[in-house]
Amino acid sequence: MKKIIVTLSFCLLGSLMIFGQNTVGLLSYKPALSSEGYNLIYPHNQPNVYLLNSCGEVVHEWTDDVDFRPGNTAYLQKDGSIIKTQRPASVAGDVIWAGGGGGTVEAFDWDNNLLWSFTMNDELQRLHHDIAPMPNGNVLMIAWELKTKAEAIAAGRDTALLSQDVLWPEKIIEYSPAADAIVWEWHAWDHLVQDFDDTKLNFGVVADNSQLIDLNYDTSDGRSDWHHANSLDYNEELDQILISIPTFSEIWIIDHSTTTEQARGHTGGKSNRGGDLMYRFGNPLAYQAGTIDDQQLFYQHDAHWVDDYLPNTFPHLGKIAVFNNRVGVDFSSAHVLIPPWNMYKWRYDQNMGVWGPNDFDLNFQHPVPTKLHSTGLSSVQLLPNGNSLICSGRYGYTFEMTPANEIVWEYKTPIIAGALASQGDSLVINNNLTFRLQRIPLTDDAFVGRDLSPLRYLELNPNEKFCPSIIASIGEVSQYDFKIYPNPADDMVVMEWNDGMRVDIEVFDLLGRKMENVTASGGRKYLDVSSYDPGIYLLRIGGMEIRKLMIARE
Image (tube, rainbow, N blue to C red; front, side):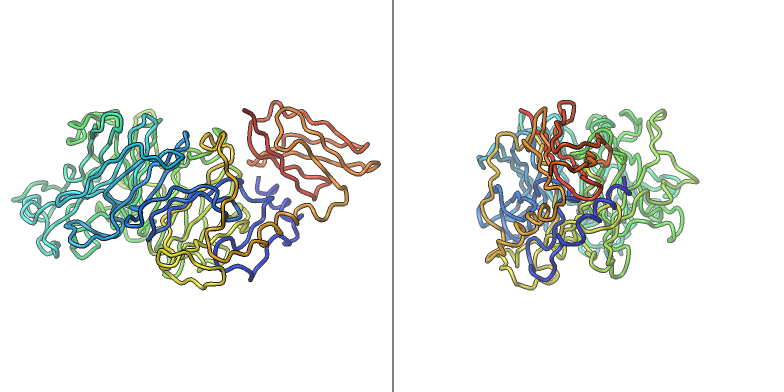
């Protein structure tokens, strides 16, 4: 696949990347190498969710009251609705508040009508950061829950690690909109171990209990926001939950096949571990194993199973992707790892008391490493054509990169402290905080029958000629005068070129697999595409020229 992508890039001769013209919004674009789709974005410090095309034009939006802010994520559903997190803009007087704080989760249909709303935000608990919509219609949510100083000491917390006199350990709830009720819960507080005080609860040998959470492992100077969980994902096939704990520099997996009662204990569920950790990865020192050299994650974000919007044949399906924020002093990276899952024993295997792997399966860095550096926020997404989409959150900078490390799309969120930026503005760190940006394929069910005509650019004073000139340049130079129609197609397409010229025509899907390879003359060729799955295909003509073909069916 890599060889195909590299070869295709040669035909563009660099002409599709135009530097120095835009400072916000779309910065560069190579359409023939980019994965087609719409971009879902929910920037910080403002209330609206936007759907953008590849040019950066708004094609749909879900607006909200100016007094609300993200808390922090939004997810598009197959029926065209969104489920999003939010919070009041003002947090003055809130008992529980830290970066990433939310409070409310709401669903809106395509036309922005409220479908349901759930709030958890009081003096004892607060939703924050992320959610995970589930196939059954329920939604998993992360929440802080307050534990007093007395509760913390009784559990075995070192008093030197109580600088704010309270702790906010994590809990996960499963909310059912249909029942308007919490139907399942998991609490980190039920799964502790400590070796500080043998007169208190949870006393034990930390190194012998890697399935439990060391109550006195702390990298935050005893502040209340002990775990600061920042991402949540659900695997339906395994019935497991993945949660990112950046202050531990770890990702955790827990069993969701338990009842709430079993989740409080240490047995039950498919794993027979109850709510204990099935797997943890990134920093063995958090459970007193390994050495500092074994640490592989550094305040990570966006840990998730690789499965969104991908075909069943995708080579990295089911692995785990993660954004590694503080892996270097001046750069970040993203990775894909293969967890040591043992399906026969329904567990994640350890090696010498440590959960692996010892190395990542894939590593992603910007070709100029320091251009990808974000100490917080950020995301990574693997795309159907093998590219990666990476968002550097503190700079609101997102780029799409091929496996050959070629940048084929760049976008800078055009927001300054919540207000729309103008083309030409220079943005600096934290001006345009962007928690995530997600690419959704054109063929997704959410877009069926929708009007996705461009409404406007997100930025003010846009350079409206920039993107059209890039797209137009794809077909400007052609020795064959090659045409293909209808496009989009259903079952048959017609290809035409200069009569008398003999031409080689290759058709690839977005995974780089060759679908057709024909040599033809006479100026016309009919191609039966009735067996092709709906989606985007690339035609390579004469070994050089590139055309796109879209297959779409009702």
